[in-house]
Amino acid sequence: MTHSVEKIGGTSMSRFEEVLNNIWMRPQDGSIYNRIFVVSAYGGITDLLLEHKKTGEAGVYSCFAEAEQEDAWKQRLQEVEQKLLAINAEMFSGPVLQQANRFIRQRISGAEACMNSLHNLCSYGHFQMQQHLATVREMLASIGEAHSAFNSVLLLQQHGVKARFVDLTGWKMEQPLPLDEMINEAFDGLDPAAEMLIVTGYTQCEEQLMRTFDRGYSEMTFSKIASITQAEEAVIHKEFHLSSADPRIVGEEQVVPIGMTNFDVADQLSNLGMEAIHPKAAQGIRNAGIRIRVKNTFEPEHIGTIIDADYCNPRPCVEIIAGRRDLFAIEVFDQEMLGSPEYDINISRLIKELKLPLVNKESDANSITFYLAGNRKKVNRLVRLIETQYPSAAVELHKVAMVSAVGSDLKVQGILARAVSALSDAGINVLALHQTIRQVEMQCIVAETDYEAAIRAWHKALVEDENHGAVIRRCAA
Figure 1 (spheres, rainbow, N blue to C red):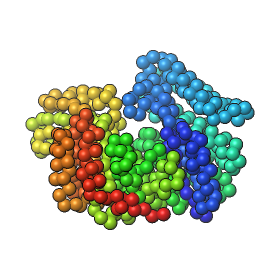
Figure 2 (figure 1 turned 90 degrees about the vertical axis):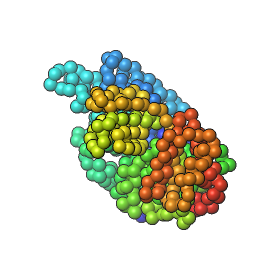
Figure 3 (figure 1 turned 30 degrees about the horizontal axis):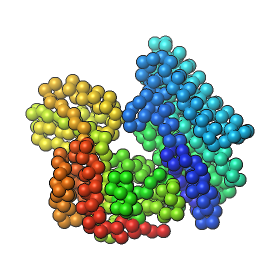
Figure 4 (figure 1 turned 60 degrees about the vertical axis):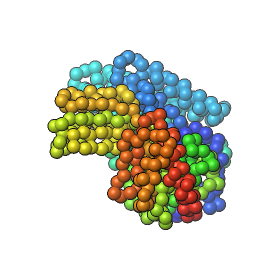
């Protein structure tokens, strides 16, 4: 039996009518079945349950963990419940609405009861709250995925589809299982040819996915299900095409949808925060010999982008101009650094402990610079920790942007010179420039205010003027 495993992102899920018509009710090979769907929480819900991914604004979890105001998390949880009930009211009416509301109220009240009990327990000195916070975080995250998966099944059943809710959240499960065992047990006896399987993006397991992958847990669930069930194809539905650049910056007429690329390029994009798929998740799918297809939810007739392990562009060229405007550069200068790897090792450890995404780093004889994403509060804390650990060092913090040229093969003579010239002609000052020997990516650091101009300059010089369109569009059906 052949089937696909397909992941639908939160932004797409929020437009549930279009997901219904463009994905679920759209036959593939003559049938709407033989597909397993891993769904994310509706857009913005995980931010409310945990904390805002970009701004760091407090959610239920961060209010509970920081405990600056004892009952602040309860108010946040009530706000989440009202938001989820409002989504239900938008989707359903009558008995189905009551069913949807009853399900999510049970999850919310269960979580609140657990957190109240934990708070009371940790008022005794023998129990430390810090030891349980990771579990609280996972429990709260699971609510969003359970809500969207359960609602999806109700919606499909209303339209005559045989759909089943596959709950991997481990709700009220006595003992967590290893990830592979959890998935094998959940899918035992299920037949995707007979019914559409809608699976929670969060999986409760011994490994505690959020400890390693944090908000990337749904992609690990997707990857594991694809490899364990031996899917023919893994499909990712997003709200945009994987294109040669952001059309909102360079213009829709200038961008070219990417037809094919490889896992190496996908990893570079993930590092820039443009996750087609988390690198660890991609590794599992790659090792299983499964190709990935990235599709635009709102253009279902488009074939999408194939990510294949063995693909290399038949003509070396830049495929994608991407980047990040929200970067912090932490520059550490100390003459005692010369010849010592200690600074790099220790500061990298601090970055990992604070869970700040490290995008790149560079060093010379007596300085090292780390390029980081994340919220300002955590970055400022990192700066203070570095200054405490190395009192003789001068630590400077800069707000910068990174522009990146990515391709499966960038071995093009003179490409670096053309890239620098394009920025110079656009009046953009280059703060730093990186190119590795492997030549799959070239990165440039510019002032944050120059970000969009730099994207446009590189796209014109390295993609449009080189007429790479036909090569980039190439795709296997």
